Image (cartoon, rainbow, N blue to C red; front, side, top):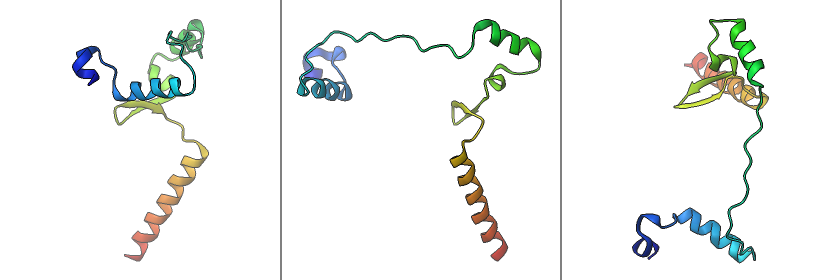
Amino acid sequence: MLLEAFGEHALGKTQCFEWFKRFKSGDFDVRNEERGRPTKKFEDADLQALLDEDKHNNWRITMGKIQKVGKWVPHQLNERQQENRKTSCEILQRGYIFM
């Protein structure tokens, strides 16, 4: 119905649900919320110093990220991920020994 009325300018299903939730909770303010930019983790000079320190370092490696499944993700695993990987390897190793 919205698509017929507004064509390509119609809201998507998810956005309609978001507006409905806001209106149902009593929030009838339709103005856009102010959104700030995320804070920088590095100052430009600090980042440039890291890159200049070793010319062979790739900037992605300097950031500690590698490409996986089309996305850049942190290279370091957290403790839970390390434990999951260890457990998976142990299970695979046990299965290999008994075959």
